[in-house]
Amino acid sequence: MKNGRNNPAKQSAAPEPAVPKAVVSRLSLYLRELQRLIRDGRATVSSHQLGRLLGFTDAQVRKDLAYFGQFGYPGIGYRCEELVAAVRKILGTHERWPVAIVGAGNLGRALLGYKGFTQQGFNIVAAFDIEPATVGQSIEGVRVYHASRLSEVVAENKIRLAIVAVPAPAAQGVADKLVAAGIEGILNFAPVTLSLPPTVSMVGVDLAIELEQLSFSVTNRGDAKEPDAKETVRLPTRSHRSA
Amino acid sequence: MKNGRNNPAKQSAAPEPAVPKAVVSRLSLYLRELQRLIRDGRATVSSHQLGRLLGFTDAQVRKDLAYFGQFGYPGIGYRCEELVAAVRKILGTHERWPVAIVGAGNLGRALLGYKGFTQQGFNIVAAFDIEPATVGQSIEGVRVYHASRLSEVVAENKIRLAIVAVPAPAAQGVADKLVAAGIEGILNFAPVTLSLPPTVSMVGVDLAIELEQLSFSVTNRGDAKEPDAKETVRLPTRSHRSA
DNA sequence: TAGATTGTTAATCGATTAACAATC
DNA sequence: TAGATTGTTAATCGATTAACAATC
Image (tube, rainbow over all chains, first blue to last red; front, side):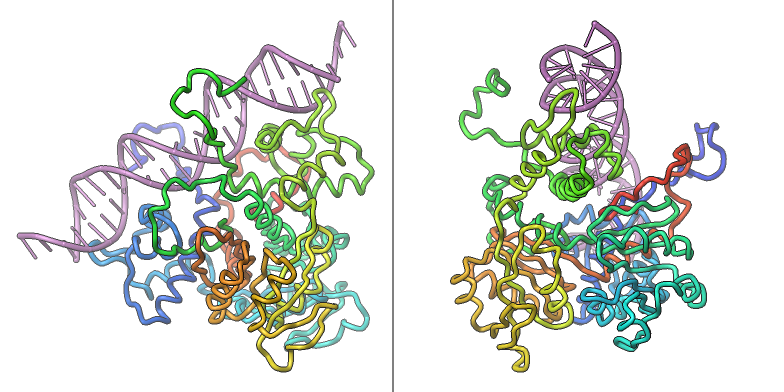
């Protein structure tokens, strides 16, 4: 119906609006909130309610979801269970992902024991390090291999996602090995910019940078919006990277 | 010179364009890259070079910096040392921040030992927990107090920033106590939306969500841009939350 | 039915990019 | 000087919000 007429140039393969990164990020927040609503016994939720919980407008919630299909019921809202299933399918977490972690130090060990991964559909199935004292150990039930066995173990376990938790100077080398091993996505905790081929996705989490963002907003207070302090109710801060 | 004429309506207190959150986030990336350039012995860098390293345009780099002043030299570029000092001042990390951490479990302990915080101007000076076995301990040289002593210790040490690393169900309660203690900014690792007064800033890091973002981009591959594969050189992935 | 709420289009708003005079 | 690069304004692009017919 749409895109059919008056566009003789491009024939097949509609350009597909391409989902903005920000939309996907909010999708995860919707999912988290929906799961909590279900735990609290809620059966349905409106875009207005869901938005209010996260500090978004109802229009934004509907628009975000509309990128992927029609999930709501006019007059009713969204059925929580149903929407959770839909969002998980969109995000790809309706099936479990085996994940590798490189670096079993301070941070790596904490991540190995993080329950949230398991709960949301990720299983850390292998760890890698080069410390002789660490290699061969089993941490939180996960075996630590020597980094030289990366390709082998990744292939054996059909691992597509990896977490990098090594010191900054080692990160690029590790990333190169992960790419060579066929890894498709990297969650990078090392405070460095990684050079990666465009075929590999990356999400970076720099813990010091997160604190810097806080430092900035705490330092520059009173500047931004203020005029409309009409809301008496204590509203949730915008959750993920707000401030 | 600017804003002087033809604006008789608003008299004092110029509206101040208000810095977009995305700009501040890139500022941290510029800082990280500049620090590496200095380590590599570079004295100056152009907006084009700095942008290239991070996957931004030169115009964006200049525009971002222009929000805060004039730091460059036409024909030369930016002096790295000088720009680092300027950016740190903007972010507020030219002075050290004492930070509290609540939750000395799995993740909390890892954060207590994280060197990156110290390097970028943050000192974790106190930890809090409620586990009798943990309270009283000293971890990585940081004393663990009982959570009931929050207000007291926060005031004594003039702590303005706190890290929340407790289980999800405890997070809101902890946040309330932090607010009551006068904390101004919270780095939240608990996978929940916190309700906070607008006077308190928050940055949220949900580790499972970061993996979900990866899962999405790895799942939806081949969709987005592709047409211009003119770059043969392996360019850095956009560093912080790219993909 | 009246009330609630969706999906979607159009209007608004904001952020990025291009372009260029000024400067070293 | 010619070449490089800034800071800034204007043009473009994209994302958010408002509005509303369709639906339950």
